[in-house]
Image (cartoon, rainbow, N blue to C red; front, side, top):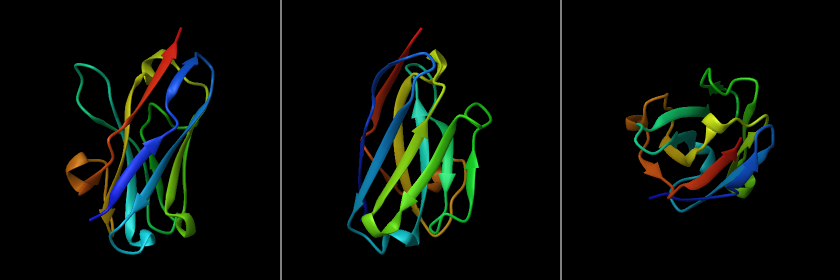
Length: 124
């Protein structure tokens, strides 16, 4: 069982930056897990944001965030990050990190473990 805790959310103005963290504990060696970032705005479905595989060799981004967001991880610290730049009001949502053993994709159903989320609000 992997326990995930996100942090780093907050209120930021349009064009600003935030970095979200995802701290993992328990389960197998952290590098065994692929990590995904998702977000969910009120009244909307949870949507894929970014993906990074266990050894950071493969990353993937939703078109809406490509070029603005960067996903990274440091396995020695059991931590992953989502670096968000040039934030827009439409980025406002609750952001979740998720973990899946071995590989995963863009679907939330690919992931077994989820954090509680952290709120990001971008003011116009």
